[in-house]
Image 1 (cartoon, rainbow, N blue to C red):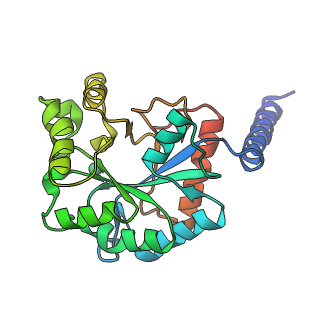
Image 2: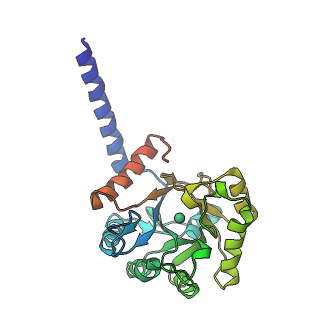
Image 3: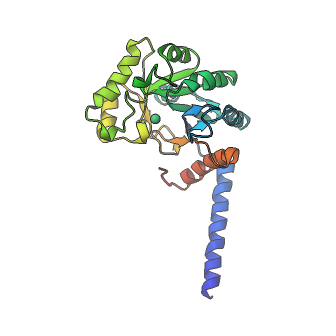
Length: 260
Ligand SMILES: [Zn+2]
């Protein structure tokens, strides 16, 4: 066999192998919970900000979840299922929003409610009431309308750059609770950056779980302080880009490749 034939055989084997992997993802989808990471739903910022989706794009994605038999759960539903064996719906997913933009209140919440879905929003507490961010009143209203509220620290600094972790992890939680929100149990690492110390600090302050920016599937065996999330940005290829992102997460998970 000459080199060309060997190369062609290798390519052919690779194509067959990947075809098999993709087929397996469709026939036997990985079991577990996919968590999605969003930031904004805003028609005014969609053209200038990669982290914004238009309302139409977000609605298209919610419709996709519904049509493909995905069911939204809260972070607490996931923890309860793990701790007490409570049953989860078929194909559970968690929709999360980071930062606490006001469009989460004006656009995301009504759309989620209209679909009969749930979502989780992680708030950077020093932004509460500032321009373009939610107010205290809006936060409370969200918590009463199927939007679970978690902490995204106080100042949105990467935790590797923070000297006093308590100021970011403990005080952000307490501030929200002192202002009348229900107990805060969940956390999202700014920029997806975490350290051993920050995980310990979360445990010391009675957080039950935390989400990163690494994509993948979550099972009850996944470290609950390093839950994986698939980032949903304003994809260049729109709706197809969104579907590809989900497929890619499943394929890499099936291949055992850690996604950062
Ligand atoms: Zn953030």
